[in-house]
Amino acid sequence: MPVLPITADDLGPKRNKYTLGLIESVMYFPRDESARVKNELVIQEHIWTTELISSGGKMEFDGREVVELLKAARLLPSFEQQSENVKLPFLQGVWAGGILCAAIAASDDGDHFNFASARVSGGDVLERAGLTKHMGLSNSKIKQAWGAFRPVAHLWAAWLARIDPDTAPFPCIASELPDFLDLAEDLRQRGEVLDWKQSKETVLNRRDTWAVPESLLPLIPN
Image (tube, one colour):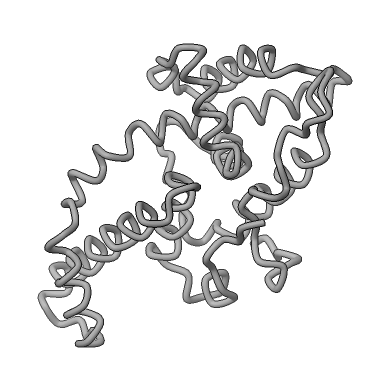
């Protein structure tokens, strides 16, 4: 089971936008470590540049870290370019989250869904969340998205369950990170024991689903 790259400090008063960037990178690139690292560096460079400008150049940074980041930045896409690069992963992740939400909701109602049924109901989840503009994937592409984003479907499902479509921070605001992860962990645990109809396969596979480090459990929501 892979674990999210967070520490106790990331859940305490020191949590910040970069902490959220670590979670975001896993959500966008659950199976691609190099892409995760690249996304983390783009976010870090953007945060530092933004804060440096807003402080009038008065912020203090670790000089060695700045030099290393600037070296890496030459090989990185801009923040704006990266925002374009993650549009497809966002679409795929949203669908994976919607399918998990639908499967769990069906179980709560006493139904037993197969993947095809959950895919249809997953579209309903996206529609209720105001994300109809993100629904444009063919059935085959949705199946591919589920295969690729199944390890983080619980994180996307937690985002879907919490969002206000008009003001939806991604994946959440820093002060709400423990609450977000607490919900995601609940959804993960439920998905790992829920079977698809007429299948021995569980909705989520414990071996490859990203989880909060055990040392940080139980989470204490705000």
